[in-house]
Length: 128
Image (cartoon, rainbow, N blue to C red):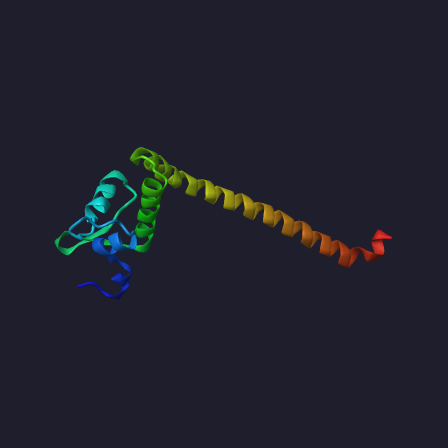
C-alpha cells in the first residue's frame, strides 16, 4: 500500500502511456522499452517497491521523455543519448558555477549602487 506522498509516482504502464510509446499489435503497452532504457541509462532510477513493481517520479518521467525525444524524434543512438545525459551531470555543475558568478556580479553592482547613493546623499555639498 502506498501513502499519499507516493501518489506522485506512476507505474511503468502509466509511464508508457504518458510517453505515448506505441503499443504492439495485441495492444499491450511496450513497457519493455522503458525497462531496456533503464539498463542503458544509469540516470533512470525508478523506485522498486513490493514484489518488484516499479514506480517513477516526475523527475524520472521527465528524464524518460527526454530519452524518448532524443532517440525517437531526433533519431539519436543510445550512445549519443548517454553522452548527453552524462554531460548533463556536468552541466548542472557549470550552471551552479555560473549562478555563483552571477550572484557575485550582482553583489558588486549593488555595492556600487549603494555607494553611489551614499555619495549623493552626503556629497551634494562636497561635489560642487
